Length: 426
Image (cartoon, rainbow, N blue to C red; front, side):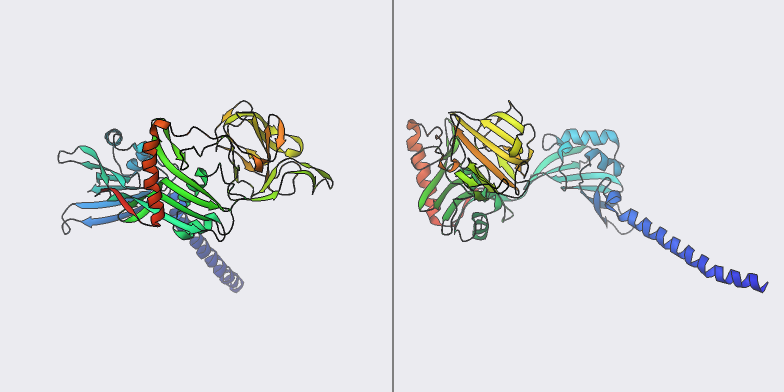
């Protein structure tokens, strides 16, 4: 009896500890399940506020904020609030003239309000200042309308001098990333932003800026820009005429040309065009008929011009390789790619500035970079020496209108930071 009792006493703490441990693990897993993203985001992420309209006895209004995940649908979310299917479809139909609720974006927020469990109102912000409101009217029917936050477009000027890089110094001067990218787009035919930018170069940017509730939200069109690069001045004037819209220099000549100065942005040249360069892998001197741009693997590569793809695939020491035929006898080639862009294949058409592939280190290569070649009439030339043909200038009959736009833009650029309010809406 005593032996059995001793054995039970020894077994009891172990059994008790095991039961307590299993209970704790079960409780932890339950909490983890309830709070995990897989559970809480199965339909939505939500916060809920409840307000009693009258003490204890009045109707109860509840607000739900649904932060959308990748697989959400409006129908899913409304079903989770016990809204009948026909009513969900009716809401979608009535909302469509304002916003298509089947096109809600991930990470946006849908707000829903219920009274005593019945859906009363839905709100969804679908732009920087516009939002959809679908609300039940006194007759019990849902009606949709558009709301707008107070907003205005201002013209802003940002000026700066380059000390480190265009991107870094432009942001420091007050530009946003969209404006910097737009600036490089405008001057991409004249300035190689991978090699031509130097300390002491300067810039001025005149752009539209959207303000919402008095806060700057997004850069719109660039209306004009100036760059001093290597002692040379470049000017861009945005002009809309009878033949279209685009950027022109002070004389009305199009800034758009046959080929971009570089297929990469903000990168460094690691090897130049040479008739006899010592190859770091093959350990012998051989011609290097192109430019090598050092850049991280995966950096987007843009087609230097519009044209037709002659070849896209593996090509010996070039690794993954693309060759494009352009107008006026030009051909460009891109080597050592990590991967080729979607839809880029032999015979396909590409547009100037279109992403055609991504930097890599395939083939005979010591590290990630782009090998870039240019041919004119099948003869290899130094890409840095290319002087491509300009686009269509402002028509002569519109030069007086263009001159008025030019003077306005240049005056504002000189103003150096003044903001001008346009078409304000309250």
